[in-house]
Length: 207
Image (cartoon, rainbow, N blue to C red; front, side, top):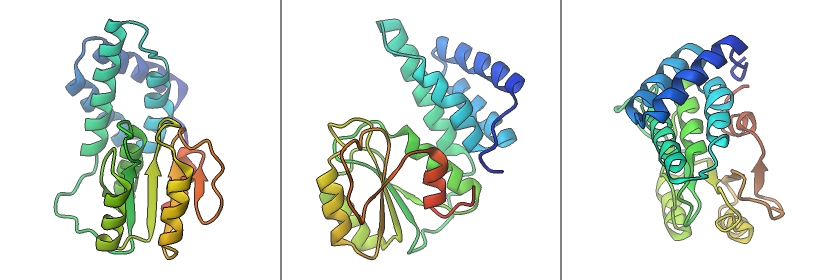
């Protein structure tokens, strides 16, 4: 299955290699390793089995650990963005649009979703972090996606009323909230995605 986990012994070795690269502040090596592991095991397994646990283990307790966390995050982002990227792929109307909520600077999970979609030949329009709501409205009017996934990392940016209003303005678009920042209730038509596999399924990928 798409979301089958990596074998334990493989995870342990990969964890050590990624940790060592991050400790050396070598984001390029982190990216190369992410590409290597994703080619072997797939994005979903690498994201859930390696990237998320490694990032969760770095709490930014001191300046040195903050630097390591940044090197790891940047390397993961680069690796995910390069994986299966086809520069000539054309955007198809009625596809998937991914964006970070307004003022949300951290949306690494969306990079993982985008990479997993490319891996399955789906593709998407990924507009990155901190997209103002007015810009998201404009993008939907121009690109005409069928699905919109908005990422929020913290409750400060996870404004449920904004997402609900957005969804009601575009009744023909399926609107999903992804990331841990959406803690307020989300009445229909908006839906909260509570796992990586749920996000892929919402975007039309069989898991």
